[in-house]
Image 1 (tube, one colour):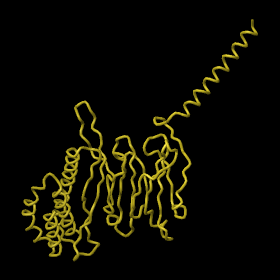
Image 2 (tube, one colour; image 1 turned 90 degrees about the vertical axis):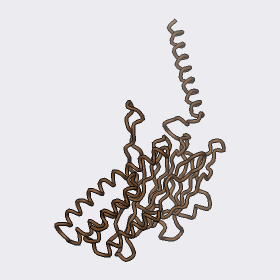
Image 3 (cartoon, rainbow, N blue to C red; image 1 turned 45 degrees about the vertical axis):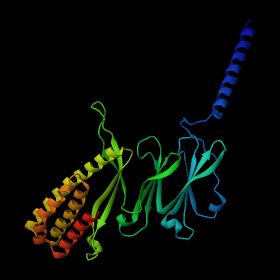
Image 4 (tube, rainbow, N blue to C red; image 1 turned 135 degrees about the vertical axis):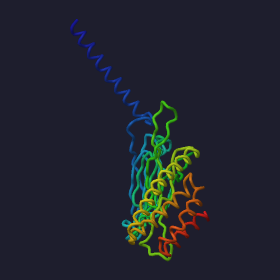
Length: 311
């Protein structure tokens, strides 16, 4: 009897092992689209890229369960590695054909870095390419491209060659009193203003544009206007403070502060919900500028006004 019970236990134990092994084998053969881990399938560079300097990044862009390949290609000359990559090629793994295929190719202006993350908080990854053409001015040389796959194709959400773009968060609005307001991702681009008759060192840095991501056009417009309204209020306060300083001290620095803050106010007001007040502001301040600023800076402010009216 004991011998029979012992044999039965052994038989049941072996049966459990076989069932577990079969289950494990079957699970390996199933697609792993929803799995936490992804498969890495060997990727081989196409023959035309073998002789070039390349970097390869493996990541599951499409949440397919298989890693795709992002290949950055550098220029052929010896300076290529130093000035950055010039092309991005995206190879997606086709599970049906069990092979990689070129899904997208993007020309890049001096690519410096590549990052993959969910920028617009919709659950899918975007490709962020930072570029830098060199030079003393970050605004004149640094850019940003953001690619997103939409309807089967990679499209540019953002494409700036300059402006030193910065990814920022804007305070969103709650849908109801029960909801918590969520932050909204945006890309901020700056600009520099200086007319030809002023030296490059007298450039004034100003906020130029804000691209709001993953919102309806109406929501994006509201958030953009709110952003410019907030920054305009701060700029107007700085302008008032600068005028107070200039009244007590007519130094070059004090004169420059009034001019640069006036430029900022003019640029921000033209993009804010208070753009209709621009004419009133100019009429109120023009006499002050004539009395307190040198001719070259008065002329520069006039150029700002002209450029705003032309747009």
